[in-house]
Length: 267
Image 1 (cartoon, rainbow, N blue to C red):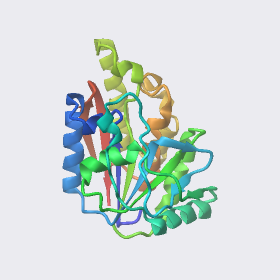
Image 2: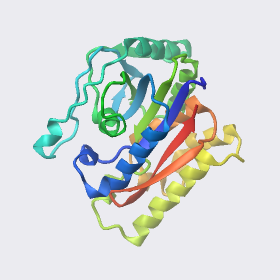
Image 3: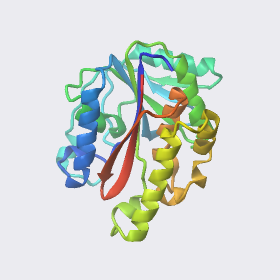
Image 4: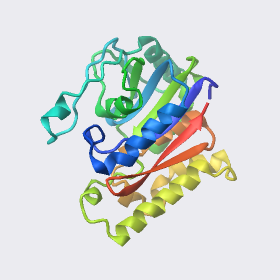
């Protein structure tokens, strides 16, 4: 990993709710604000969002991407949120080249805007919207090894003072968010979080074992309860593939009543 790159996986909450004063997102807002205050201010931000899937990794390359309000049924003000950060075509080109050089077909998209996996957390972390951003899609196969490989390919990036954010959620069972938090549900949630913390932060396990755990994440305790569909976990795989080492710090937040984790690999 380039020494000028910070790598961070975040749990980004439910739609625009973190920006609407929802009490179930209070701790998440606090953690993201805390993180931004501790990080060196980046020159650019690359976001891998759980809310964009393509047949090959796709990179926003426009100079001034619009916003995509990719959520439904929220108050009218949710669709007036603004985050007019610029794009960064040079960084987009470097990401495209790094993937191609690693044998991973990829494409640039100069029309697509930024979805809420980018603008919701960044509006909390960097509200001035003056840091150039690029967004990278997931691959719609949702294959864990593919996303580890994408991260490894990004190790070739040589962009000074870059922040890479995997924007997902360490717990993403939509039905469980809106049912009573029974002791059984809480136990399943916590068991997976313990496994994820151990996998990402334990310095006594080898990197080969760490990668193998993430490759076979669905064998973790209650994995498919916590992630019936894995798109919100896979940004973490990209982050680890890039970092190639144990995370330095885990941040915890209760979001919508569920224990959720965020991981920082540092620079």
